[in-house]
Image (tube, rainbow, N blue to C red; front, side, top):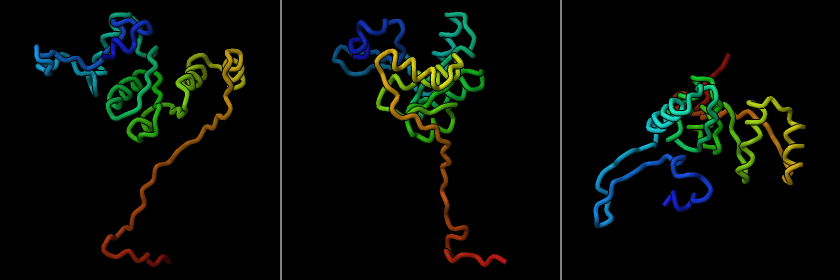
Amino acid sequence: MIHSALEGIVPKNHIFGTEFRYKPSGEIDSLVRATAGYGKVFVLDQLLTQHVTGPDHVIYTGDGSSDVHVMLHVNARDGLTIAVSESRHVSQIAKRTVLSTSALAVLAPILEEVAGWERFRIRSFFEANGMLIQEWERVRTDWLTVRAANPENSEPANVA
């Protein structure tokens, strides 16, 4: 299904996903490869070995908890990790987070971090290619959960 959806866009040998062996009835018989979680780290290491490149040349984007292991792996080896969702699991680990309705928005941190471009140059690049960065807010987000220190007594403590 994935191969047919990406046909003509991405070569089959560049697609890595969970792979099953099927029974003649169409039911799943067994698991050949699972690339969720740590399986993604394995595939990434295979690609680095096959293409003889360093881990600092990796740019990894992810949007969910199955990306946590590989993001930690990439971060530890000086690659660039970009979260593309508000999921706390990945946005706290990723070096950058991009939230946009356009997949092209992920280019902004890549051009900044990897190419060393200033924001005005990135805006100019997008505009020269028919795209306008209308808003670009850079924020630091603190995720806080505040609860009563003594759940049995939610009265505030006296502070002297």
